[in-house]
Every structure is written in structure tokens, then in C-alpha cells.
Image 1 (cartoon, helix red, strand yellow):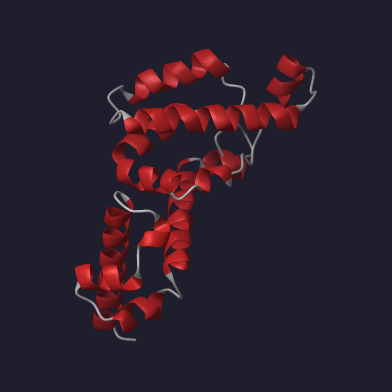
Image 2: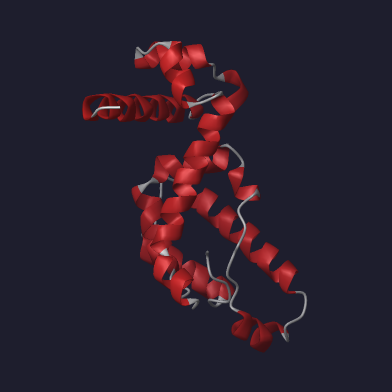
Length: 177
């Protein structure tokens, strides 16, 4: 493919994703059709199907993109295998990408999100290294609930205030990776 066609394809994908996210703000996933998206984008259905097999693959691609962005926020920690407990970085990203995160939660992907890195040294100290899987689930569920509430309120609190809330509740026990 030449550069012009690559750019055109990328622009089509961006339009499709933008319209899909907009539709998800007022509709459930199963209520959105490829036709709805194509009409709003002024694209042929064949353009949609050249990039996605269906609406669900489009949703999965958006999830993958957001999770990749979040992982990039913590790339140094992942590579060097340490836990910075830097929630502020994530809260800033959430505030800057509210629509993306609202969409992520609306699609229910937060239930599938797994914490990959757990601060084992802190866990040994705080929990005598017992029932760690329950502590991880408690943190993940609580963290997601706090983020959803923050998003629902329009992210009125600053990322710094949200970081303070998490630290006071969880005392930096878990990494967000």
C-alpha cells in the first residue's frame, strides 16, 4: 500500500473509533450497528469490514489500545521489575482521557483487567503474605469503583486529590499494572 492509502485507512479507522465511542455514550454495545457507524462516518460498510470483523472486534481493539497506553505509563517499572506505586500518573492520564475510560468501563472491561504486578514485599509486611489474591481483588474492585465515581462526577477533584484518596485507603500496597 502506498503512503496516501495508509493515511486514508488510518483516518477511516480514527473516524470509525470516534463515532463508535460517541454512540457508546448514549447506547449499549448491542444497540449499535455497523450501519449506524458507517452512516455517521460517511463511509462504506466495506471500509468498516476491511478493518474489523464486527462491532465486538472494534470494542476489543479500543480496549487493547487503552490497556497498551496504560502499560506504557508504567513501562520503566515493568522493564526493571519494581513497583513505584505511582497512582498520580494514572489519575492524570484518566483526567486527560475521560471519554476513553468511560467507554472502557461501559464496555465492562474493568472486570477483565488484571493486576500484573503486586508488591510482594509490602504484602508480606502488611498481610503476612496470606490471602494475597483476595487483597488484589479488593484493591482492583475498590480502585475501579473510585475511578468510575470520579468519572461520573466529571473528574472535579484533581489527580493529586485522587492520589491522596487512594494512598489514604490503600497505603500504596498494590501496583496498578
